[in-house]
Length: 247
Image (tube, one colour):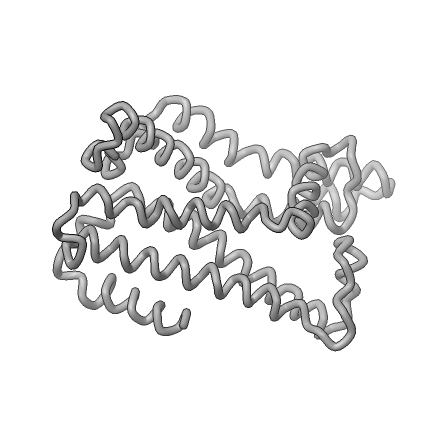
C-alpha cells in the first residue's frame, strides 16, 4: 500500500503538477516535511536493528531494550509501525494536495484543506507517546543526553546524542507545526469557528522574531552542545583523550 501511494504522490506532485506548482510554497508543506522525516527516521531505526542483528551485536543490552521473544524479529514490528504511519502520511498528503488544487471538496472553503495536515500531525504525535510503556525509554534517553556531563554517557546515550545532532531540521519543522496550528486554531476561535478563519494558508511563524531568532538557533546548537559535553564526560570517565576529544 505504501509503494502504491508513493507512486501516486510522485505522479501527482512531480509528473502531473500542471495545475499549480505554487502550492509548494504553502506553509503546510513544512508540516509534511517534518513528519515525513520523522517517519523516515523510524524506517532507518528498523534498518539499524537489522544490521546489528545480522552481525551479532547485542544491541538490546547496550540500549536497555526488552529482549525480543525467541523466534520473533523486532525489525518487522518497527517496519510495520513505520508502514502504518507512511500510509497515513501519504493519504493525508494526497488529500491535501487535491483539496488545495480544487480536485475535490470544491463546495467547501479552500482553508479546510489544511485540516488534513492538522489531523495527521495530531495522529503522529499521539502515536509518538502511546503506548507509553514502549515509548518512555526514548524520552528518558533524550533526558539522559541533556544531563551531560553530569549524567551517564554510555553506548545508549552516545547513540541517541549522535541522532539528535542530525535532527535539528526535523525538530524545527515540528516546533513550527505546533506554532502554526496553534495560531490557526486561535484565529479560528476568535471568529466563531468559521471555516474561512482558519488562516492556515498564511505563515505567521517563520517570520516571528521569537521563533526565528531564539528557537531556531537554540534547536540547531543545543544537540551539538550536548554531544560535545558527552565527549568531555567520556574523556574524563575513561581518562582517554582519543577518540572522545576528537569527536
